Length: 193
Image: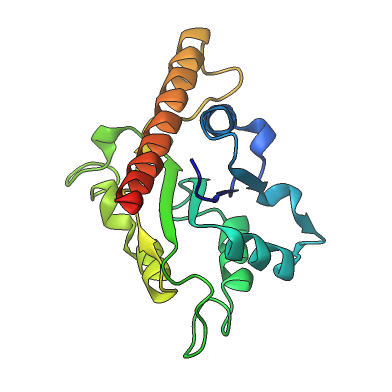
């Protein structure tokens, strides 16, 4: 790909995430030119270097927000990043155009299964019903959105998940990464027309 791709990994403990780590590993293999930023490694005393984060966003043509789906949204670490990095005058406001026209792709994993995300089940609504606040954030910042990519049942609990379950999660994680890469490649092809 010739476009600049920025992957923001919002997992608060990426080294402990079986699915998330494999998704990022596979994405780095499929999109070696992409820059990956692990938010957990970019905080100091709970703060981000806002100027550095904004500089990375300025250079990107497409941004992937990758995160585990915590309480129907992004983890607190990623929410804080959104709150401080997508600041007035940079991401929104009458003269803020830094993110205008950039693409955003939401990449998320759930612990619950697909059957749980439907009317009458434990999550009550389909997963896509929980995404409008994140999509609106992108729209408010002048970004465009690509088709979100999500995978269900991606929780691997040490001492609980057996070897077969772990292998299934790793295989699903690789498929998840391939779906992201395909969305980005399709977008780039469209851009070149």
